[in-house]
Image (cartoon, rainbow, N blue to C red; front, side, top):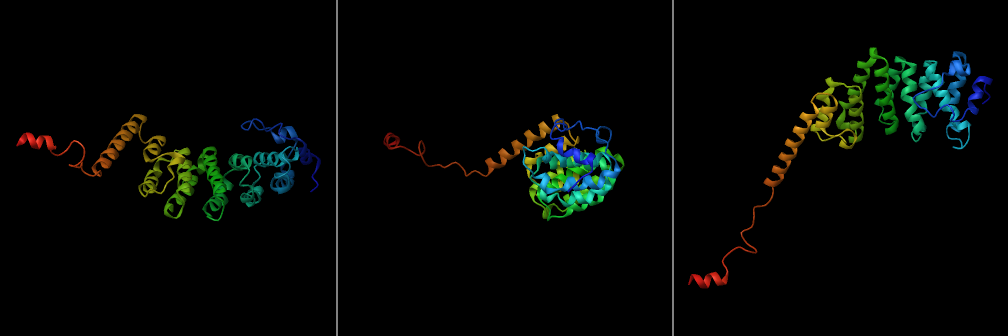
Length: 259
């Protein structure tokens, strides 16, 4: 595709302005991009030939610049096109890391389509995780929709028995990021059913601590209490000590002495 000069310039930027991931260039001020460039930026952002170009080339970085520019321009028109390539971009670390910030910049309009994407089990696991992280970032950046983001996540957790353990763990980690204390009952039910991957955000005690429901000291005490209970439970299931074997019974010598 042929781009206008200002958009075409992104093809030659390379990684130079991307090294500091938390400090983005101002694409409107530095590169002169405006809302008029949004259609071209969308095409560049989702161009799979560019996204999977030679890793040593300059143009492979052009979509990343386009993503950031679209976010800064609050390009609501980019929401559906970007979501349409999520599954194709599952193996791109940059894509998964950049999308939450990009979508949060676009604003609350992303909530409904991202919620729908997260709810669709046919979408790739890590892409759904990216969608969940978008809700986290959106909720933090836009307090007015924070509760809506939490609800979207909890709706998935309420279906925990239909999800994988990994998916439930991912949703819980996002609820922790949002400090959604009111969701503790739903989280506890998933843990009680033993249907959460504890490698993602720990066990129920860890989650209570991370949500601020109990202190670190309380978590420590509960952990030791639970561990002690487990040891006692295991001990109670051990077979009784045998009365036969080495050092038991009466030896022949003892029998002779007894006579």
